[in-house]
Length: 125
Length: 125
DNA sequence: CCACTGTTTCGATGACGGTCTATCCAGAGG
DNA sequence: CCTCTGGATAGACCGTCATCGAAACAGTGG
Image (cartoon, rainbow over all chains, first blue to last red; front, side, top):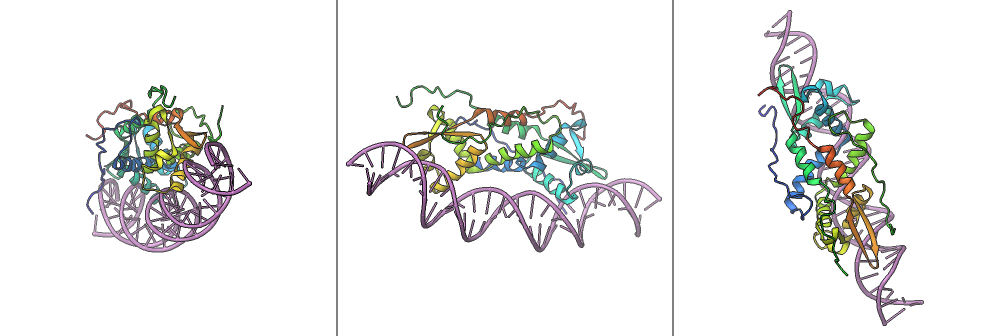
């Protein structure tokens, strides 16, 4: 009986892209966030929330989209919340979730493909 | 055309962003790729390969960067390979891996944060 | 106050995943 | 031919995770 809606951490990374080696600690942090969204149910939850009118959705609407029990949906929402990719707000009986664009933007930036930057001039020749 | 090693699938998605609900099958596919990179070791492997001169790295160089055994590194490389995010090519004794930018670009596009498209006027403040 | 709806927590269980050791395969070089 | 080395595979061990059922908790409305 305390933290009703913890948001975990705000993920204050300032991410170097994939152009330079990832530090060990950073890789652990990033893996935690990626793990959070690397699940079919959570991916769909995320898309349902993000695409919902107003950018937010009530849990009751989300639960109906799956064949899973309420507690299970709640668990997945908690994982997403603790990873910082969504945030919940209670209004009356219901709790509304919305995505936190910053977190997703960070991952997106990280994965920005290196295209062909690395000169690729004669390495061995 | 020396594709000695299997590249699994080329992941021919044409990804609708997070702006519309993800289909169930699509979410499973995406989760598979995300799971592949949602690991500290594989994240570092990816960054080591991507940031290496020429855009490719030999396995022997990668193994040295970890406290893990050869087979374990080999396993992680296999996971990345089967997810389509890297590709390996044998040249003589050594095998060189390089990242497949398409796969990463796709994920990056998917995660492109919805910024503030959804009005986002006072929801709760 | 109590009853009701909706959400979270707790404990258990079965599946998945990372790591290891031991072994096998493929080229290079005697 | 054989041997050496780089890398992949197979199988086992063990921790983590997704899911469930049951129960506790938080607001709403009578």
